[in-house]
Length: 155
Image 1: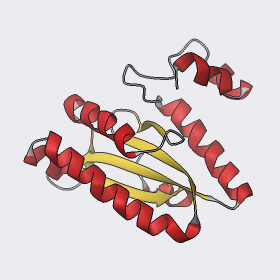
Image 2 (image 1 turned 180 degrees about the vertical axis):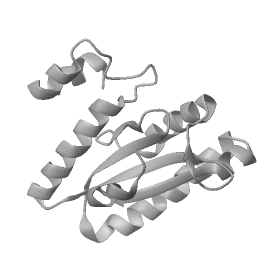
Image 3 (image 1 turned 90 degrees about the horizontal axis):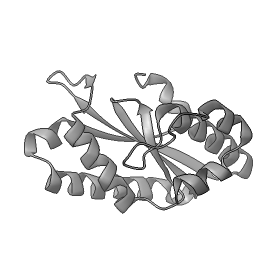
Image 4 (image 1 turned 90 degrees about the vertical axis):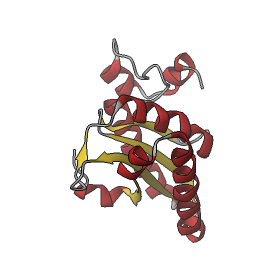
């Protein structure tokens, strides 16, 4: 979806919040402010509809397993890989600028949720392993969780 078209679809509250700012990076990924708004909106919508949405988080760790700023090459590789594994209805953006890339996985049936997320994590890990060095891949963490489980994620 083009930036112009997607901006027309954004609610006025969001449009006002990001007026004068880029909502997408050059890679087509939402910035943190817009991504967090879309995550909250999708969570509310899914709660009302009875469908689930989940969030996929990809982050880089140091030698102790703590999340650290992502190397730009690694970030671009992750951002390029995500659209190949996700649907057009899913949102991709910075959950935490420079540190955590997120994807909002929309409209998931409750009974298929575990299978979908397991398959997604596996396929994404395979893609990233083939496109990054072993050391870079080893430092990447991929986590899928529900919106209420985000409280423990570093911001």
